[in-house]
Image (cartoon, rainbow, N blue to C red; front, side):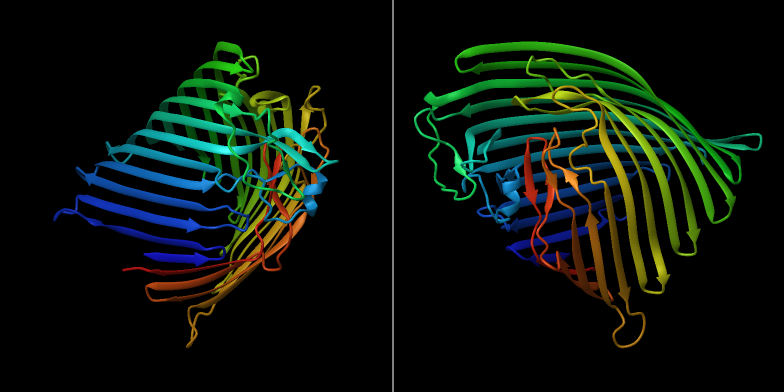
Length: 530
């Protein structure tokens, strides 16, 4: 069990229990329960979260087991959209909130998983699992209108939104894994299929007040705006989307030589997407239904060569296929996202230290983003490309001294654009460079054995905040630290985040809003194992 507390009223008790339920220990259980309650460095923002996750596992024999998992999530928080994308946001206090104190975003999710594992013999194993995730979201909030900021007055127009969203995800996946040899060549063959379905529905009403003003001034916000009456309804409607996916896949990991391995595989997807939009906008009805069927083969090839024992060279090629459920303002479903990735690298294992250097080139098509003319819908970006280099180092230098370090350079841009997505513009939330270093040391002997310290520094480079590229989120360096003590079956730890109270922005949303990073924060945790 554990208890965590920190800045801004953060409280989180949790418990993790497990053990046998029968004398023969064939039936076992595990129960995770956590409750979280917190304020925020943002004005009026509060959150509450409860997670209950029991698991039951029954072993029919040494070869067969059945596992049932259930996760209940109930979360409630103040709706917070961040700040408008404009240079003026960089001069605002990071606790500035442009929503109303009573705005809310509530989510309840029930997840069920049932997994059967069976080993026919030492070389053949079957794994089959069914999953269901049922989510309901209720949102009532004064939302900032996309591109609704006036830099001359500091006003940002708003609308009141009431939404009920239901998303049901069902899936069934079965894998057959077999290990065998053909002569001197070893194989690990994976064959399987996946059947999945997502049903999403949204009931939405947007309200504008034609007599009173719903704008809020970012420089001097005044709260307490009354909720508009139903007579001022701007948009009311239903959005429904169903995505059905049937996939078959086959993969073989081939050991050609003790120091040479080849991975060859492929996946074939059949996808059917149905969408219906039923809107009444300023009194004019709009009803549109669309259906999109697609299929695609996505191959995957990888090669690993070990010239000497601590060094591995690798290269890979893969294609990806992801159905889009987003629709355009015409009610048309956006075509599936396709991707192609090339990667080469070198990995070294030097005692307890691992080093990995990789270079990649990724191309994707039909990336959905918010329609700049209508934030209720999306538009596709024709093609984007990301090229970069990553270096990661992790391990234990000497007993008790651990290091995790990384460095990357990335160029992510629109390679094929249009009037809304200018070619060669950089993608949002894609820093051109970044680096991190986190190191801890724990005293190994003596009266202070178990006492440890950690320190880290994190650098994130410039990022574009919007497309077209008109506003840049500046780079920043953040420092963290920790002190901890481990003894027998209990641990105490204090984490210090943003040690020097750096003022920075974390990210931008696809809806045209940016979020400031948290100031100096302290989080303490004590845990006991029985």
